[in-house]
Structure formats: C-alpha cells, structure tokens
Length: 261
Image 1 (tube, one colour):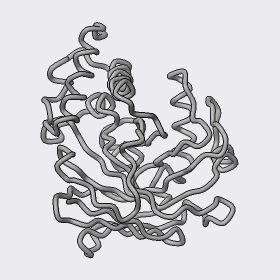
Image 2: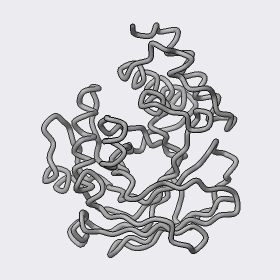
Image 3: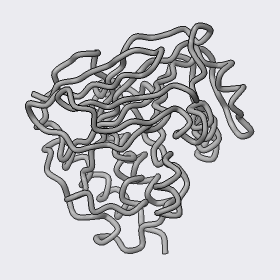
C-alpha cells in the first residue's frame, strides 16, 4: 500500500530536521511500514525540494550500492541521490564532524559532464563521450537513520546516504587512464585501511554513470552539462570522527584528502 501525500511530506520533514540538527531518527521502514521504493524516491525528492526552497542548488548526483558484494548480499540494484552545492568541499578542507550524524568516507571517481546524458539506453561509450574531466574524490556518506539501521527504502529516502563530496585535481578525459584499471588506497590518519579499483564499480565507473542516466529517465529527468557525478565507492566506507584525516590515493589520478574538525 502506497503512502499518502501527508505521510511522504512528514517523512521528508523528519529527514530534513535530522540533517539540520545532526539528530538521527528511527528507520522510516519501521515508522511507515507501507514505504516502498517508489515512495522512497518520492520522499527523497520532497526532501531535496525543501533544501532547494532554502536556497540550495543541485550540482549533480551520486550512485550508491555499486559494490557487487553488497548488491548480492541485499539483493538490490544500485540507488542514487542528489548532490547539492553546499555538500562540495575543496581538496584538503577541514569540515566540521558535528554537522553529520554518523559519517563514513569512501574513495570514488568523480565525473564532470560536458554534455547532457539522457536515458534510456545510455552506455559506457556515451558516458565517456559526454565527460569533460574526471577527478579523485572522497564521498562523505552519512545516515540520518539512527545507528545505520537501514533497509534499501530507508537509504533511498535519505538521499542515498549523501553527506558530502571532496574533489581532487581534475584530469581532462582525453588524458585520463583506463578508469576500470585505476586503483585506490584509502588512508585514515596515514594508515591504509582499504584498497580497491575502478573495476569494483559495476565493472567500470562509467557503467555506473550510464546506469544513473537510465534510472533518472524513469523519474523524468536527466544529467545536465556541467553536473558532477560520484560514480560509486571503490572500497569499503569506514566510520570517521573529529580529529581524523582521510586521504585517498588513486593511481594516475592523484590524491585527495579531508580532515574532520
């Protein structure tokens, strides 16, 4: 049974307040047992609409649940969320840990588009043809759901766990390496905690962007020129806290770091 408009509006308000005050709420899947995937994306859109009404702007999207192991475990496809302008931080920035509920960090490849991508039927070649540049990136993943007790519908409603984005130096696509072959080491306070590669992201990071373009088409929208796309985690995403520095080193793309103050 689908949620009512009032229930979806209330769910969006709860998530926005949780984000505003860094005060997580109970899982929506428990509070609203009728919540399904269609409703969850509707709640996400309502939450983003609240942010836009407050003056935020959409600068792109992120793809989540790209790990084959996680998708097999949960029996799900990838999901997506929105990137807003105030989620983007410069390389080497110090961000306030207290603005997040329970932050985690993962290394990713970020795409910057030169041309729109409109599904359905988008492929890897289409993504690469539309891409202006790529950069090493750190995604700050957060959950406004208490203790990360999430199901798929919880994380989708919660903007796919999007918290922030830290971008390193941009490499024009014509000078970029094979993105599937790019390796990533994730370091916390100088200690390597995880490693992965571009091939861990749906076989190729551009495949994740292609999936996103097709998924957005089902929601009546598209990726636009100039937008950023976080293509998916190349490693696990460890929890982090105040006083810690996280660095990702991506082969032939360079390093990127952030400190939590």
